[in-house]
Structures are given as structure tokens and as C-alpha cells.
Image 1 (spheres, rainbow, N blue to C red):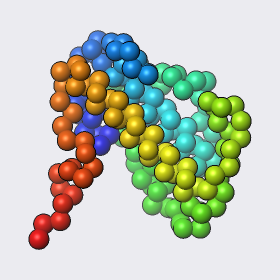
Image 2 (image 1 turned 90 degrees about the vertical axis):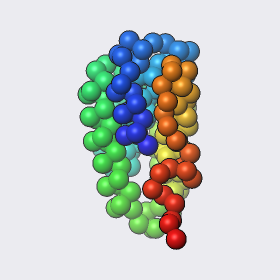
Image 3 (image 1 turned 135 degrees about the horizontal axis):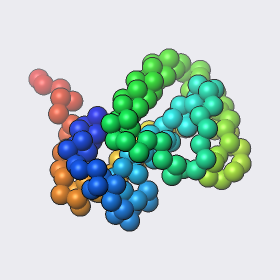
Image 4 (image 1 turned 60 degrees about the vertical axis):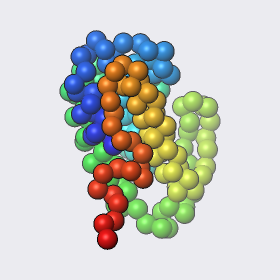
Length: 153
């Protein structure tokens, strides 16, 4: 889904992508940036590799092409991490310090992983609204109706 949305965003002039539309992270670009930032933050936690963040709206890349390249790289890293998981790891306690709440939390890893993917979905929903309001069609985003997922009998 990330790749499909980035393809749509690639056709949008930079000024429109960066126009503040009153969304939680301002613009289309700001929303894409936040999703990437959060993914890199969580992935760093999961892999025990510090990803330093100053705020949750920190801009990682002002340049769309660089943002897109890092999104692709990060999605590959996420897939590799998911492929490496075991049932035992998913059931184990996972400890982290929240930037938003400034305190430590402990949850089973499966719960954090569910949050990780739900967070992406939540903000991609905002992104599709911003795209539609800007006159760009994000296409089908409903998981059930994605092309190529239905079993042909």
C-alpha cells in the first residue's frame, strides 16, 4: 500500500504535496514523513538499534524522492524483521520508552506489532483523505478489495 500511495504522490507537484491542509501532520508530505518516522522509530526499537527522534513531527526528508527511497528501504527492513519473528518472540514482553508519554511501557511484542501496523493504516487513511481532497485518486485501499488478493476458483 505504501508503494501504491507513493506512486500517486509522485504525480503531485511538490507545492501541493507540502501545502498545509490542517491535517494532524499538516500536509501530504508531512503525513508521509510521520509514517516513515514512526516506522523507523519502532523498527529501531524492535532491532535494538537506536533511531534518534526529537519529535513525532520531525521532518526526515524535505525532498520527496529521498523520502520515497527511504520508505522503500524501510519497507524491506520491516519485511525482513517480520520474516524473522517466532511465536516465542511475539509472546515475550517488550519494553520501550514512549516519546509521547515520556515513560516506560511493557507489552507482549505481538501487541506492539499490531499497534505498529495499525498506526500505518491509521495515517494512510488520513493520507487518502488528503489526496482525495487535493483532487488525486488513491485508488482502492480497502484490504479486502485489493487487486490480486481474491482466490480464483
